[in-house]
Length: 320
Image (tube, rainbow, N blue to C red; front, side, top):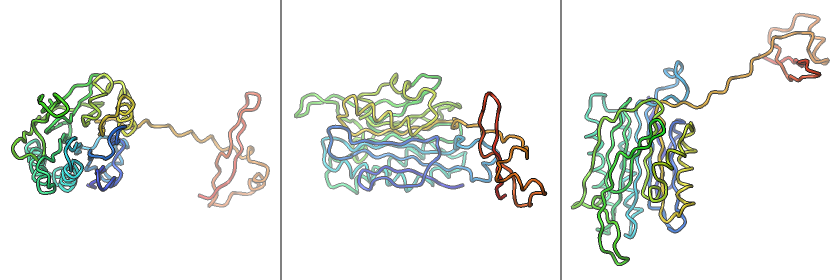
């Protein structure tokens, strides 16, 4: 089964192969910040083309990983912290998605967050540098969630959006006054608490959205429900979420990862080829009908028009 991923790295930029149409991923600097401290990842293991012949194109993959990271604003090296975390996730995504069905997936996801925190500690020189993390692991019709900090995971079903995470925040005194402060983050050995939710049931038509706080400051549950709606283009939804956060203030970097479970792109029905009538061949091709056509030529409708309510078809020959 092929492994595909899409990575938004704050330092290295975008990389990876194209993922299926059920995924969307987008980030923005915002309107105030001069550097990108967000990072995001989508990864999937999908069936190969031969096994997918009997299924709808774009059908939901059985195994997928979504994650966002937000380097803590106000401290130096936030981009290095989120970059180290997303790099560690991308390096371990294929292993995580390849685990057998009876594995402890939620526990494995929690361990991945802890090991990513160790990578952050080794990558930064500022002891205060840290990053939030919110990750969602899809295995079949089950969703497992792990997070630390104030990045969030949402589930939308039947037009209703519900938060699956609770922010790890408290109020504290800062030079700018009373501000919300993180009580858990990757890179902080003393205050790392990973909250886990396992075995959330997924149903066809559900949408999973993972965002940083640059989105949640400006786009709430009702706004997410409006932007997702019946849309089948996950990338367009991710871009719309981030764009709305920018329009409404954009005081921070913002990132969104969107996954549609069991939705498939709209299918366009191919136009039916008209029945061939040699008498309707264009003049320059009509003479060939006087004799049997060569085996390597087949007729096709070159142009269909309506004249005085009557259907007129111009036929041509083409090679097989």
